[in-house]
Length: 372
Image (cartoon, rainbow, N blue to C red; front, side):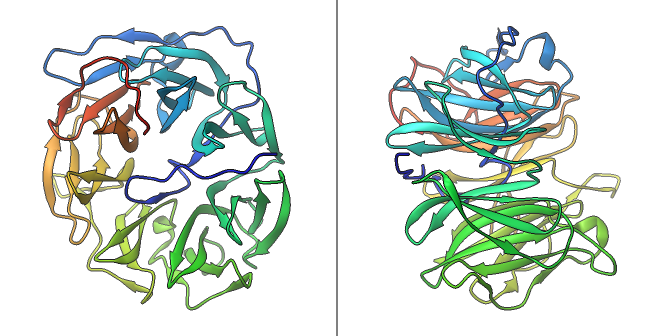
C-alpha cells in the first residue's frame, strides 16, 4: 500500500469530528444531491436531496477528486456525499456512512468512513477499499507513528487501535484501562514528541477524562485532563498552536475548554454558549481556522444563531456570520479554495454552505484548481 502523507490543516491537526468518516464501499444508492441557490447576500448552499432533508450534517471536510477541490459531507441520513467546490454541485454518487474524514495518499485524497460496519479507508477517485477496521469505531484520528502515517481508532471498551497506513496493517493498541467508550482522539506534537490525546467516557465515579500517550514509548504520560462533571465528558477535540505552544480545545455539553498541552494547564474559563435568557447550551460544532494570518475558533450555535469567530486565547467574539433562521450549524471545517480562506458548514436540515472568511459571505468564481 502506498504511503500516506497526511493533508495538513491550515492551523490545526484536525481530529475526530473533522478527521472522521463513514463509507461502506461503492454504493448502489441512487439518491443524488441537488443544488439549492442561496440568496444573493448569502453563501452558496446545497441540500442533499430528499434523503437529507431534516437530517443533520455530522461532518464536513475538504479533499481532492480528479484534480479538483471537493467537499466531503456525511449526515445522520447515513450517506456520504462528494461535491465540487466552490459550486457544491454533486461530484459523485453518495456512499453509505454517517461520518467522514479526508487525508492525502500519494497526492490523492483518501476518505476514512465510519458506520455500523466499523471503519473503511477508501481512495476517493477509484472507490477502492484500502483498509477495513472492525466495528465498533467510536472515535478516530489521523497522525503519525515513528514518522510513518497512521490511523488511530477507539472502541467502546477503552482500547485504541493503531493502524500503519503505509502497509495497511495493525501496529498494535493502547489500553486505557477504563473499560468504557473512547469518545475523542487527537494527534499532536508536544516538546517534539508524538502524543495521542484520548478521551475516556464517564464511568463509575469518574466523570470522564483525557489521557495523554507518548507514541514513541506507548506509555501514558503525565496527569489526566479531568472533566468536571458527567455531562461534560469530552466528545470533540481540536489542536492548534497558540503563542507557539500546542493547545488542545475540548468540546462538551458545557462549552469549550482550552489546555496548554506542554504544561497540562487549563487556559482561562470555559468558552460558553450562553443565550440571552442565561440558559447554557453546548456548541453543536466548532473548528479552527485562519482569519487572515491569525488563528480563530469558529463556533456553530443553536438554531438561528450566527456562526461566530472567536479569539482562541480568551473566547471573545471577533465577528459573526448570519445563518438561515431556525437552523443550527452542526458541522464545520476550514480550508482554502483557489487561495481563499473558506469555511464549510453543515446544518441540521442537511444543507451545506461555503463561506468566504475574508468577506464573511458568499463565495463566487470558477471551479478552483488549488488545494484545500
